[in-house]
Length: 130
Image (cartoon, rainbow, N blue to C red; front, side):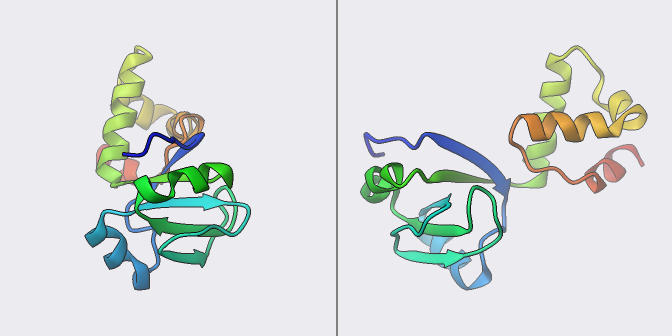
């Protein structure tokens, strides 16, 4: 790992990368970053706005210093099951029962997820509570 760390990290859903780049990113274990300005990387593309529309992927240890200088945000992919597990733990830390909150005030879970920079889909609650 590089001695340089990026200032921000943001969780995104696994499978977010464009199909034409996903295999290279996964097989090479590359980091993916996003920024409001063009970035360098082994592969680059423009996509949906997260912290900007410019994306790059490549070896973190080789590119972190440059990405930090370009104010890039490191994107960390998470599966929906990982997000739900984090939310269960968070709700428990707040002293509440996840199933009760999900059934009675589901928007609260969405707001907590957003507050913690986690992707959220209200449909995930259907499989939990329904």
